[in-house]
Length: 55
Length: 226
Image (cartoon, rainbow over all chains, first blue to last red; front, side):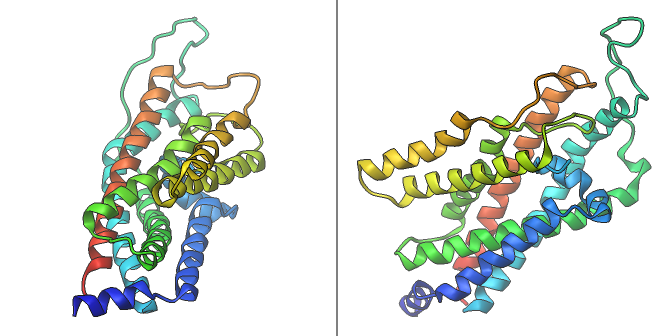
C-alpha cells in the first residue's frame, strides 16, 4: 500500500508539476508585483512585511 | 495526481497565510503604523529644533480594521503562491527518491525563506513606508535574479554531488551580492534608525517563522496517504 503510494508519487507527471509551479508564480506576481493601484493599496502591508520591492 | 498537488498546496497556503497574518498583525504591522507617522510627517525625527529625539510608540492598529482584511486576503494569495512552488518542488524531489514529511518540509520552507526573503534582504532590506529606493524596475530585476540564483544554489547544495556542483552552488549564492543591489547615492530615511532596524529584523523573523510553518504543513499534507 505505502509502496504503491510512493510509486504513484514518484511518477507524478512533470506537466502537472510544471502547471503547479506556474500557478504559484502567477499568484505571487499578482499579489507581489501587480502595478494596479487597487492591488497596491490592498497589498501594501503584506508587501512591506515580505519585502517585495513594490514602490 | 494533479488533485493531490492542488489540494496540498491550497491547504498549506491558506494555513500559512492565516498564521502569517496573525504574526504580522502582532509584530510587523504596528511598526509599519509607527513608520507611517514619519512618512506623513505627523512625527518628525531631527526636526527643525535639531533634536534627534522622538517618542517611541505606535498608534493602535485597530483604527483601520478594514486595512487588515486586505492584508489577510493578500497573505492568503501570496502564501498560496509560495505553497504551490513548494509542493511542485516536493513532487519533483520525490521523483528522484527524496522523502518528504513535516520535518523535511520545514527545512524546505526555511530554504524558501532564505531564497525569497533573506538573500534579497541582504541587498534590499525590508523597508518601512516612506523610504526612498532606487529605480523600481531595476530593484525588481535584481530581486528576481537573486531569488532564482539562491534557489539554484541551495538546490545544487541539496541535490548536487561533487566538487563542481558545490562550487557552482557557492558561486550562485554569492553572485547577486557580488553584482550588488541597485542603490541610491544618498540616504533619504525619515524614520529613526532604531525603528528601521527593528522593522527589518522583525519582518525577517516573522518571515522565517511563516516559512517554517508553511513548509511543515505542506510536508505533512503532501505526505498524507491520498
